[in-house]
Image (cartoon, rainbow, N blue to C red; front, side, top):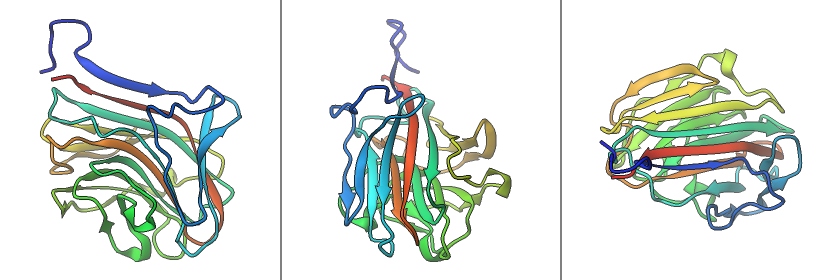
Length: 230
């Protein structure tokens, strides 16, 4: 269990992106190829936006935190982000947690199903994937990889498909043993996916967009993460 010696037995981050710039101590914004780095986009409720061009899946824009959160620290490890695609659905996305920071290489997106094949770039990652172009099913999918061993993929029902300019709340709850439950707008998509990630591995939130046939942007309205302190 988390330490009970005070009221601060958990560590928490909540960012609503309300300022005119993002907090560079909390976030890095690497890009590959012709992507535009995540930056504050002035609109209702505060939003940070990353943008990619139609460049044959060579762009990657990522919003990445620090690698400091682990499921085994008293749990559960909770991650939540409210996101919306803008301009085009022909993208592939990752929204979740990873043990390695995405960088300036497009193939470093933590996991994706581009081309219909489940590909994981990192040894430990868990999250939501979306492939909206001709190279995959245009539905949210959830999965994980534990020490390079991939889980099965679960596809969300089509009623949860992204709609342009419409925010969705994606939530992951990791148990202390590394099993994951996934929610979209409060609806359970997959419960207790075993071996989703190595429980003791340090993780970071990551929100990634790569073009898959058209230019587009991915907006994040908020990011929340919480886990035990021990």
